[in-house]
Amino acid sequence: MIGHGTPRRWAYAGFSLIELMIVVAIAGILIAIALPSYQSQIRKSRRTDAKTALLDLAGREERYFSTNSSYSSVGTDLGLATAGFPQTIGDGYYQVNTPTVTTGTATTVWAFSLTAAPIGAQTKDTSCASFTVTSAGAQTSLNSGGADSSSTCWK
Image 1: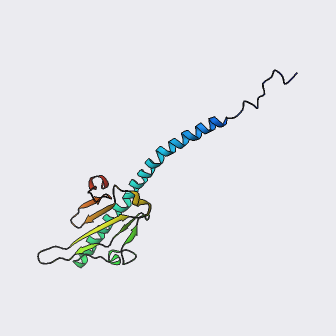
Image 2 (image 1 turned 180 degrees about the vertical axis):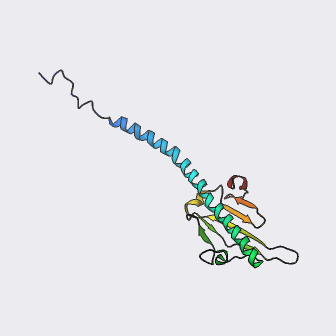
Image 3 (image 1 turned 90 degrees about the vertical axis):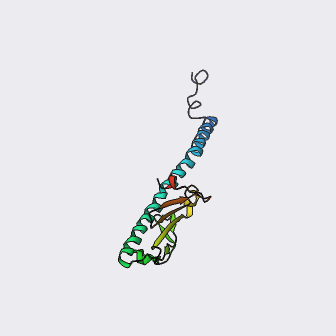
């Protein structure tokens, strides 16, 4: 005789709603902890775009200076596709502002300064809000409050 004393197998199979909700809650907590850390690491990795582009442009400025005895603030002079600035660099997370060129005189030397600022999603990187390279070789960075963050950002 089947039915009265035999437990039904289908009644014990699967997960209860409470068990499922516990798993969802644990997954939500793990995601809430991991996602901000992941996004922070992604922003740090994108800083390389700015640093690489600035150092490349500094090299282009020096190359231009070696043949023209002056620096330039025109993009096409430096081998870029367009003449004007600001120009978006890398994967589109930074833009290089117009180079600041100081004309040499009898008492001063020619000089330039290049600055890259974050755009789009990268603006959330408040630790390294801008990168700057000069003709003297100085590599500096400012955080969103305007304080020097060079030791952290140019690593």
